[in-house]
Length: 415
Image 1 (cartoon, rainbow, N blue to C red):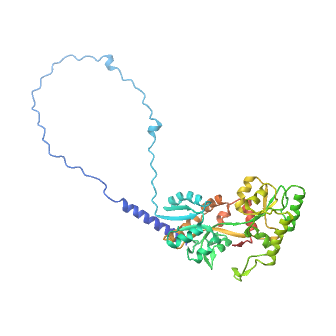
Image 2 (spheres, rainbow, N blue to C red; image 1 turned 120 degrees about the vertical axis):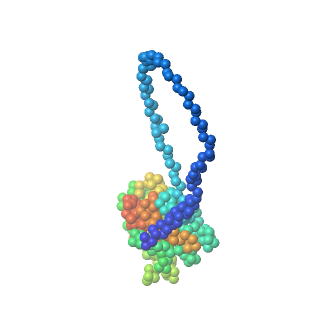
Image 3 (cartoon, rainbow, N blue to C red; image 1 turned 120 degrees about the horizontal axis):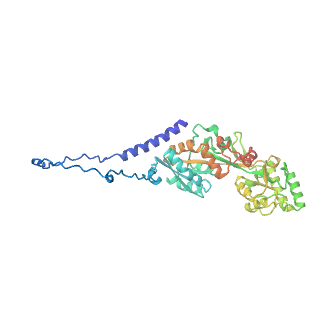
């Protein structure tokens, strides 16, 4: 399949080369010289008798005449004169064009990669920054005005797949190089619809200046946190951000769930666990914490991250998107698995192909040959700070935080 992808790219490049040759043909302006017009022949001068020369004594040359010329040193050519003219770079004519919609995290790096793609594959990337990719795509794609590729989270793709707006994706024989859970997330009814490039999930963070060893149960979270509050070292037991996604590891640790699964491992919409015993216990734990003053009543995302960063709360459940601000704040932290074997939701970011695109095969080849490469995946990782779904790239990352987060999400539920 890899050869097939390369073959497609070669066809596109050869077509571009043939177009350039066809456009470059024409007159070379090599003109032959016209014959010289007939001109009058010069008359030969009539010879006159030569007079015998009179012999006069030959003067001896004076010393002045014999004086040898003085040699003046030759000027060395300047570096500027010796400098060879610089050849102007030859513009690469693209053999094809792909339009990509991406958000403010991924668009800049894809734009940075555009020059390499053009030089290597004669393929022009037109990267467009979008803030509401899914919503805009749902409107534009059916009208034939959408891009060739979109970069979104897998949980935004369900509606697009149901409406027939996304094309199946072939991994070019590299299936084994991708994280199984990432492939699972991008698969709908047995069909793979994206090339995953990153995974993400939440983990349990604790302040290492305040806590030596991570708690393994929620009872320990309470006892450790309340002891710190009693000593006046902290304001709360834990910072809490207020969505079901954020609190899900707490609910699962009590046995709660939102949807059950069928025998094949697929989500079962008929098995609702919102009112399950575990969910009720998890909600009660949070409610009691707020009532006792152990937890903040305000669950605003930014405010609660600030509580952890300033040391007012020793614990927080957070995702890789918080790593940048935690590092910048200077708070000493470590990452652990969730207490009582709780597990989070997990997501996958990936590249999806527009089924209405006129360049489906070209988009497929681009993903298989360029996106599914270590260099590209590492470049995307550097910007987004998400563990690569491409295993050869993941193996080259030495980031203790991301390794710990991956461990916390080992049993995560893909949304």
